[in-house]
View (cartoon, rainbow, N blue to C red):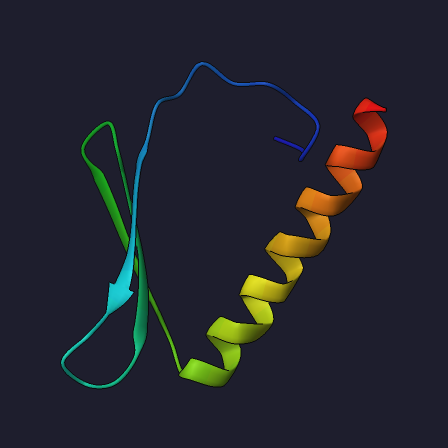
Length: 62
């Protein structure tokens, strides 16, 4: 599946800090659980990428 292909799959997304000082992105869908841990620096880089993608998507709507 590519980034531009729509899907009917529903998923839950949780993001938060762990006891170990990591940032966890947790995805759950149809009985699948995917915990992904990132150090704070990596998490900030991911946040920057999400913000850039949101900005680009917003520009496409205009």
